[in-house]
Length: 341
Image 1 (cartoon, rainbow, N blue to C red):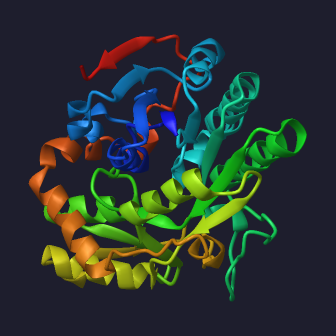
Image 2 (image 1 turned 45 degrees about the horizontal axis):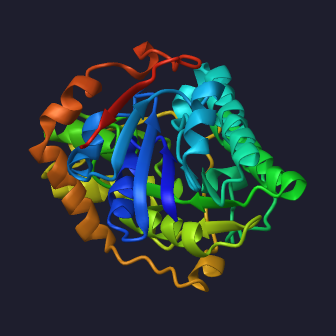
Image 3 (image 1 turned 180 degrees about the vertical axis):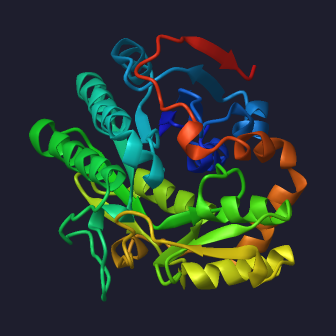
């Protein structure tokens, strides 16, 4: 693979992937491009900066000139950079379209010009929309319910169209809900954990019957690396195999791990377009050798312990209400390079 460009590599999933791919002997260099908005933190990369292979670039995927310069220097792209929080998309849909759709197109244009050898576009199971029963294969229709999922579905289709039209060697991955250390505290698991650790109440939407598949971030990254190495250009791969759980059962697990009881839970009306159930069939990727290895209860306990031991990483973020957080800005012209050398 030689030289890999990772967009959004200072985010939750991206930073785990960067640490993983740096260990690969056939990877000579890894460059992280990240705008460091609300969910991207350079601290997430931590020990990755001990590697002489790593270069960090502070910038935005909407900056076409910067993207072109970077893509020209790399043989592979793994594209994580995205606006990803459903609730934010309700009041900042335009930012989601700019980053997730326009930003992806900017990368694809550069990959086409410079004949990038591998391009992995990282997406989500939410593009399939709710499934009352059964599991979505990669051929299942895309029926996103919310602006976030719609922006990801659009970016998936644009990415695949660049393979069909221009021959850009794109693969798309769609994973279920990830959990693990370093996740921004607006997501449900770190949100509940950080509140419970502070002795605060948590809120459960509706009757808590929404079903999600919970996949450890390291299992997702293993699947993404497998697609990077062995995925067929133009193909989509579901990455699942975690644990299916209702939001009420998940809450029960978190209460137990944090030593709290149901008095800490307040039921509130359901949020807009809260899909009742997601489910994916991941047999296509399993045929390439993918198999998740993390036990859910052990992984959840490990994740909770990380938040317990690192309040300095999440406490400042948790004090800022979601609606008050700044919405992501458009393209930046920052070109700050931080080398590990």
